[in-house]
Picture 1: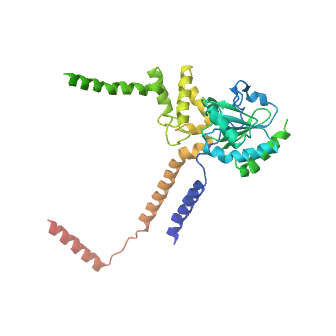
Picture 2 (picture 1 turned 45 degrees about the vertical axis):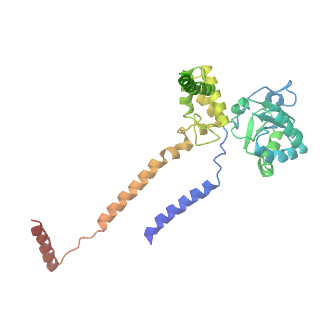
Picture 3 (picture 1 turned 60 degrees about the vertical axis):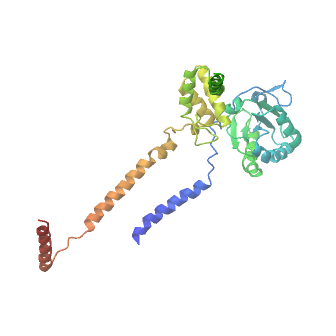
Length: 176
Length: 156
């Protein structure tokens, strides 16, 4: 009997590892930018390209930076969630339109609704690289000091909005 | 004569065709080689099992452009790697750095080898001890000797 115990224990441990592995998402790479100042940029606004926007304009406010594109399928999935959030006026959402054509982006917003205070155009994807973007959509929670406090990879869902993003925003709002 | 000239002309077509492929290359082939060498050590984050050098994902192309531009600015390979790590994390490196949380990754296999080797050693020693010396009766000893001797004689 004894000789079966060790192989059995090893089997159970391995099976445990594999089971946990099944539920891990290898696409979710922890961002080294969390806890660091949001990279600065100055980009033309999507709706009015003559005007510019920079994260520095947001000093003193808690805000979300949402990376999106008209060609991005999962962005459509999160779009209603963002629209809903924008109607609640809890936290301003700014869009980074990533590697997109201006006309396509404007059409998407006109047809699907616009949850953003404003969007900026990152046509060549350079700011995306500065922010470590590798899969659209991605959402950053940025605090009053301009420090990235959280990064959501993939679409924002009602669940992670409720459990993670909104509590964090409320907490950051209390801080100076 | 006319025909062979035409054939010769057609032979030239492939040389023109290949001239279009160098679009992505930097003007400087030395720099391009250095960029590819560096990109082979980096992971494409979109198709995670491909290097930045071999991936055709758009992000990989952008990152290659970024590496190329930083090289043009005179940054060293290490500075470029540090920049990418600061944006994408250690995950962009194919060879993970030795850190407290990668100790298991780096030394786990050796630890496993030691444990398995130790277990094997103990097991073998136990087995050697477990084989008992069987005392033969005089009669059996006699028979064994006969058999062994017969064998020797047969071979001789």
